[in-house]
Each structure stands twice: as C-alpha cells, then as structure tokens.
Image (cartoon, helix red, strand yellow):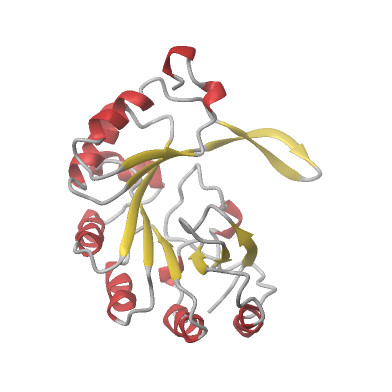
Length: 243
C-alpha cells in the first residue's frame, strides 16, 4: 500500500484512543475545502515511507499507542489496503478507517474480514449538492449503500459533515433525515485558505461559526442518537449562542 505520510501521535482522530494516523495518497473527489489537498493526486505524489517501515515502527510502539487510523486521500482506492490492515491487526491494534463512502464494496470486505473496528464516513452534502461540493459526479447509490452498511451495526461508526459556506441549515437537516437513526453524527468546522503564506506553507484560519449551528444540533437530536460539533472556535460565535 502507498503511504504518503504518518502522524505519529494523535489524541483526536480515534475517539477515546491515542492513535497514529497513516495517510494514503490519491482521492476520487475534489472537495474545495479538503484539509489534505496535497494528497489528492496520488499519481504524482512521491511517497517516502514504505509499508514495511510503518509496520516495523508500529511493532516498536506497543504500549504507547491504542489504535491506528487509516486516512487519506481516500484509503479504499489503495489495492494494498486489505493486506496492510491485516498486518496491523496481526499486531493487535484496533483500526479506524476514514472514508468518503464511495466504495461500499471495499468497506464491506474490510468489515467482513474483521479488519476494521471503527469507520468515520464523510457525508458531504444532500444529494442535489453533492457533485458541486465534491467537484466531480458522485454515485448516490454508493453513498446510500455505505450508509446502510454502517447502520447495520457491525462496527462502531460515525457520520460527519464539514460545514462549508454552500451548506445551509436545511441541507444539514436533509442529511440528518438521510441517516435517521444513526448512532453518531458529527458536524465539523472547515478552515479556509488565505493567500498569505508562511515559510512556503499556506496559512489556514478558522472559518466563521454558523449562526444556526446550535439550532440545527437541537433538531438533529430528534433524528440521530447522538450529535455534536467538533473543532468550532466559539470565539467566532455570537455571544448569545455560546453556552
């Protein structure tokens, strides 16, 4: 499996666990707000870390890590994903998969093989806005199949949506209705890219706090079992809405 990078310690990517995050190159979507834009074009990206180097490193991290996150890019595009996860599982690490849900057959295969313990699936938008948000046509049948697969309850999971300016309160409620009964729905803050660069790297800044965020979470609480926001800076919120 191609590995673009590894984050050696994360306290936020795997709920309740100290984890390492393995990033794979390449994605089949072109979301304008992607946090990992440098990983989108997997064909041109030079990967400086081999699978065996990562496995050897994980062997030495027993007792220091609670789990492994496989993220991207879109990991389910990787032909060597199953073999990599099998090696990680042989080391007795729980595995979380981050995915856009466009390849339900791959996800089903991993779940059936008991190679994944937790799945975080992004739901980008309601169906009518999906293609515009993602920058490419997206098969909504595949998205529905992935949603149904996770809601069967064979692995822990969360659905999550990044709150970007084209999305409205009504859009988020439509997504909530699409995943009605889900165990967890997370609303995430996006970061917008400024033209200013620091030491050659883009400067990311927090986006504004949606005026409707608190109201929409209250409504979603009637649709899903649990809903919360992640990453929002309350200093951007109107004073009346900060709890």
